[in-house]
Amino acid sequence: MTRVKHVATETAYDGAEETGGLVFHPLDQFIVKPLFGDGPVHWYTPTNVTLWLAIAVLCIAALFIWGTRNRSTIPGRGQSVAELMYGFTHKMVEDITGKEGLKYFPYIMTLFMFILFANYLGLIPMSFSTTSHIAATAVLGFGVFFAVTILGFVLNGPSFLKLFWMSEAPLFLRPIIAVIEIISYFVRPVSHSVRLAGNITAGHAVIKVFAAFAALAAVSPLSVLAITAIYGLEILVCGIQAYVFTILTCVYLKDALHPAH
Amino acid sequence: MATETVATEVNAGMPQLNFETFPNQIFWLLVALVVIYLMLSRVALPRISAILAERSGTISNDLAAAEDLKNQAAAAEQSYEKALADARSESNRIAEEARAEAQKDLDAALAEADAKISAQTAEAEAAIAEIRANATQNVGEVARDVAQALVSTMGVDVNADAINEAVTARMKG
Image (tube, rainbow over all chains, first blue to last red; front, side, top):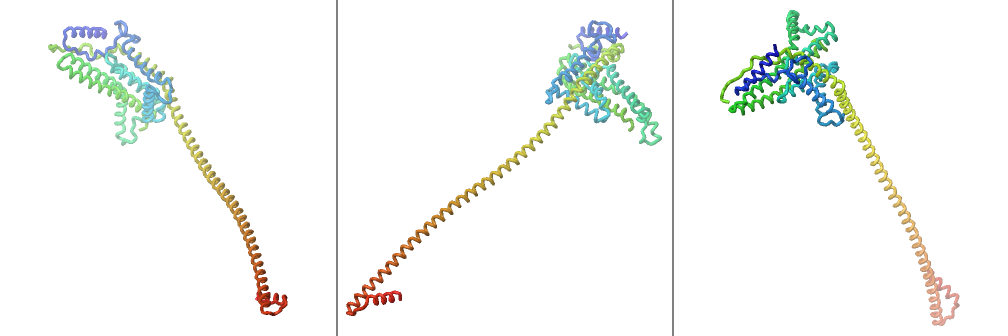
C-alpha cells in the first residue's frame, strides 16, 4: 500500500514540475529508495540509508583509524581531532557517571560518533540524513533505554527500583512522586529519540521550503539568505543534538550505576 | 513564474512514518553501529589511549631528565666555583712564595753589601789610625828636634835622653 503511495508521490512531483509553479516537496529528501533499480525495500535491500550509513562508517574509520595511523607523540591534524573527540567524550563519561562508568565508554563513544557524523553528513546538499528517521533514532533511544534498565537491575538487583522512591520526600508524597518518576522514566526513550529525529527533520524540511521559494525571482535573494542562516543554525543543531543525546545517555547510565538519589 | 500555483504535497505523508522501510533502516543501522563499535573498541580507542599514555609518560620523563640536567649543571657550576677558588688560593700561594724568595735574595744581598761596607770601613779606619799614629810620631820627632835645637841655641849642653824624656812627658800631658 505504501508502495502505491510512493508511486503517487512521484507522479505528483512530475505533474507539479510540468505546470512550472512553486514546488513544495520538503519531505521528499527523506524517502528511502533502493540504490539499484526501483524494486521494493526489503530489510536487506541496499538503499540510500545503507549508502549514507556506510559513508558515516568510512568517515569515522578515516578519522579514528587512518588519522591515528602514525601514533605520533606530537599529533598531526587528523590525530589531534581524534584525540580531541576521545578526550571530550572520555571526560564527559567520567564526569557524569564516575570512574565505574568508564567501562561503557566505547559504547557511548560509538553512539556519539555515529550521531555526530550522521548529522553532519546529512548537511551535505543532496545527501540523506539517516538520523532524521524515527526508525533509526528509536533504535538508538530504546537501545539506550533497555541497556540502561537491564544494566540497572543486573548491577543493583531490586534496589534499582529505589530510583523511583524519593526517600527525601515526605512520606505521603512518595507514592505520587513514584508514579510521576515511573512515567517520566518510560517517556525517556521516546523523548530521547523524537528529539533527535525531530530536530534534524525540521531543519532539513525548513531549508527545502526556503529553497522552493528561491524559484520566485522576487524573493530568491531573501530565500538564499534564509537558507544560509538556517544552514548555520543547522550546523549548531547537528552538533548540539548529538551532544545532548550522548549526555542524556550518560545521565541515564549514571542512574543505572547509582540509582539512589 | 507569475502564476502562484502552489502544489502542496499531502498524499504521501512523512517518509519517516513509512513503516515498510523500517526493517531496512533498522537492519543497516545495527550493522553500521556494530562496525563502528568494533572499529572504535578494537582499534581506535586502545590506540588513542596508548598514544595519550605514551605522551604523558614522555612528558614526565622529559621533565625528570630536565631536572637531572639542571642538577648536573648546578654541580658543574659548583665544581667550577671550587676550581676557581683553588686556583685563586694557589696563585696567592705562588705569589707569596715568590715574594719570600725575592725577600730572601734581597736580604742576602743587603747582608753582603753591609759586610762589604763594614769591611771597607774597618780598612779605612785602620788606614786612618795608622796615619794618625805616624803623624803623632812625626810630631814627636819634630818636637824633639826643635827642642834640641832650641836648647843647643841657648848654649846648654843637654843629654839627648833627658830631652826625649821631657818632650814625651809634655806630649802626654
